[in-house]
Amino acid sequence: MRRFLNALSQELSSAGLRGYGADGFAGQLPQAQVPQATEPCPRQQPQAGHQDWIGLNDARFAAFNVCPTCYHSLVRPTPYAGAFITKGGAIAPPPNVPVRCDMSRFWVRIAGTVLLTMNQGGRHDITLLARVAGIRAQDGECPNAQLTSARQPLATSQRTWYTIQDPQIGAQPLQGWTVCAACLISIQTCCPAIATSFAPLHPPGPRDSTCAFVPSDAYDDMRSGEMLQQVGGCAVTSGLLGRPDVSQLVSWLRENPPRPRGGLSGSSPAPSGLCPRNSPSTTLRCHTMRRLFNFTVCEQCFADVIQPDLARGVELARKFDMAPNAMPSDFTCQLYSDRMRRVWSEAVSTGDFEHLRQKVGERRAKEREVQMTTARLEQQAAVLRIQARTQEHLAINAMSVEANQASNNILVSGIGGGRRVDAWHVEVPSGVPDFSQTTQLNNQAAMLKLQAAQAEGEARMAQEEWRQYWE
Image 1 (cartoon, rainbow, N blue to C red):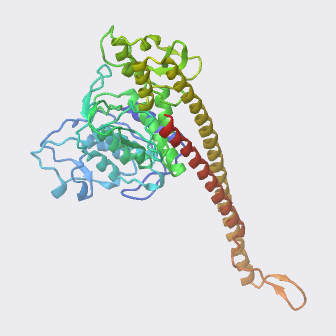
Image 2 (cartoon, rainbow, N blue to C red):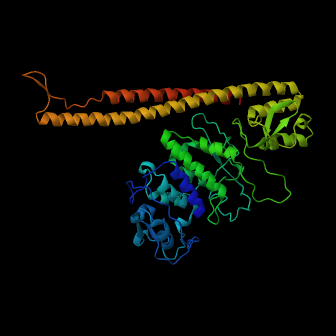
Image 3 (tube, rainbow, N blue to C red):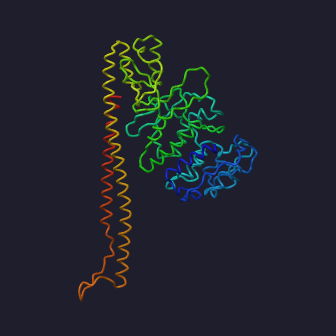
């Protein structure tokens, strides 16, 4: 956990955030260092009979308990120590009830890192720790919470699963990446700026899957730490943009497939990563079809669609190269969508290879067009938003100059100063601020933001057209 939290705090600090602490329950302090436990928590398992529990001085969070060891190593060195008291009376746990130290929980320690490194604008206070500790998902804890080693395979469970979703158009770019409700609620609580970027997996309903995160208290799961670094970066970016943006996480997941874990030697090699869908990948492998080289299919979709047809002896499926290969340039998967799977099924039923060739060619041409249009519009919007922020900063500086000038004018007029116009008249400077330059700069910033929003809207329309008619 120490290495895990160090890496996460360094990632968040590198984003340029400073001054997001809080004194007790509210307020801002300079950024604090993330303390590390000097010894393991002695009450990681529930224990009864202790009367020295420490908690928040708030009856609403009476169920939040911290052992003295974790308090002195993890809480006392921070600006939040003053919000804690030794529990007694109504907020003390009954001595005969086994109680676990909440600071030993995976997500509570992550919340502590968030509180100390990325609490922009004082959005969170110390109650974040208690709120995260109190999360209880309807489906229960994460199925991976009890894993004790990276050698164990991820646990599978039937429940409702969640994935990343574009809040504007509802597209789910990584349906193979799933997260359980318990982990998702913890992420949403810690990083509300990206809370709307997740939704139940399409189509809705319980299914067998596994959580991408391993919130184990027994060992540090390296991939969970790497993903949380990306989540933190997305939260920072979303706060700066004023809208959810998890593109950093999506790109990282596509370019960094999960490492094999568990399993038996001699088993079939695992796919090189999640389906890239219509986002070009340079690191994953794919299967290609003889005489139709641009019909590229990722390993995951090949296993889901083509391999069952191979097992049934479908002649068209035999045209695929059985071994996946790294492409000389990037590729996109052509068989992840319901529409293209119907096209493939029709081709299998009729044996019409030319119809398949036509549909794949049409789709690839439209895909390239949409990718180029979207990239151009998104780049244009990004430049416009940078220009808008520059104008806003200039407006702030101009307002300060204009306000100072008005103050100086009031001072000059108060001591009888001014510019003599003639023998009978003295021009006294006005004490009314002239914010015309500030207004002009703010108007320019607003216009640039409007243009950026229009470009982003056009990009979403292009993506929506692709999703409805071509994907």
